[in-house]
Amino acid sequence: MSTQSTIHIRAEDIQGPFATPVYDQGQMVQRSYACTEDYILVRTSDSSDRSESLEAYYWPTGDAPFEPWGTAPRLGRRVGPAIIEADA
Image 1 (spheres, rainbow, N blue to C red):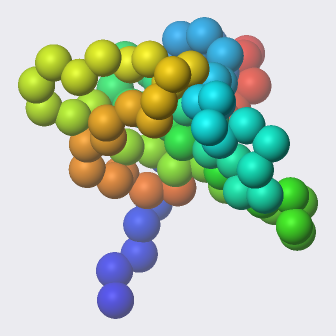
Image 2 (cartoon, rainbow, N blue to C red):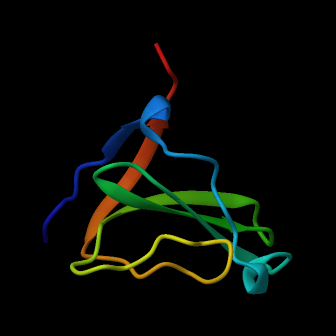
C-alpha cells in the first residue's frame, strides 16, 4: 500500500476564489474549484457531517478551459490531498 504526501499550497498562489458550479450549489456534497499555476484544487464540503477535504490534480493535457462557475473543469491525474498555508 502506498502512502501519499500532502501537497502544500501557498494561499498567495491560488488564482482567484474557489468557484462552485451552479448545479453543485446547495447540494449535500458540494464541490468547488480553484487553481494554481501547477494544480487544479477540488474542495469538497459535506454538509451532512460538516467535513471538508481538499484534493490537488494536475492540469489535464490539451486546451481545457478553467471555467468552474459553469461546469466542473476537466482534471488531470490526481496528485493527492492538499492543504492551504497562510501567506507569510
